Length: 40
Image (cartoon, rainbow, N blue to C red; front, side, top):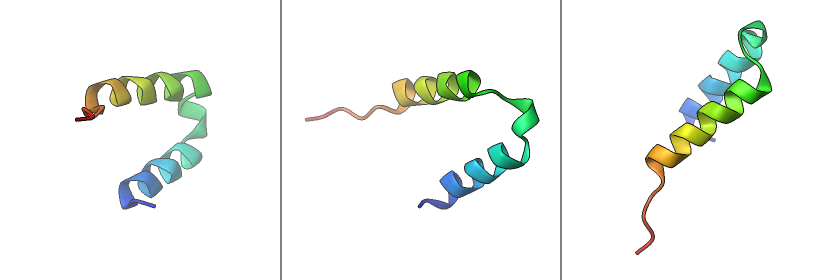
């Protein structure tokens, strides 16, 4: 597991009252759209 992924998961677990699953799913989709790599 990448250190950034671990940090993100720990942050979300610790701050569970600040987010809901829909918010996280929306954020993940936005990041995936911006960082999707081209297949050549």
